[in-house]
Length: 122
Image (cartoon, rainbow, N blue to C red; front, side, top):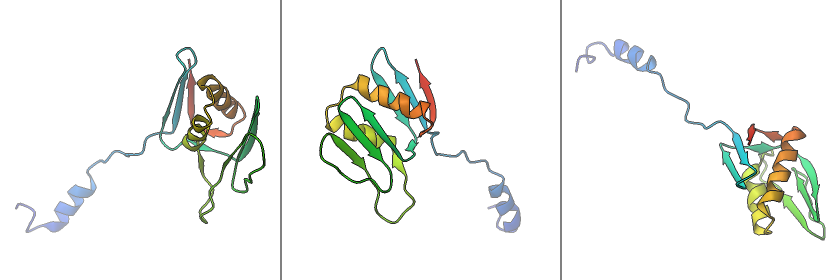
């Protein structure tokens, strides 16, 4: 009611209102002892090929399937490639890969610089 005569003052006040960014920071928290992995935000993975035990994983825009224990994460919809850690973890869970092996893979992704997130392991 008080701003009807002065809409400019109203708009100025609205523009001064602080709004927090709703995006969650990309973060991976690993507890090796309790075998827990927590992923928050959109954790991205750069193109990489991972070989762990009897499993080979290729992450990237040009990933192609080959015979054997092979997981392919691919995005083919014309957008900039952006593979997510959650896609990798879901694929590994479908293959019934033990959590300890998933933790090892995530740890090595971090060490190689291919995991784009804050990484915390304890």
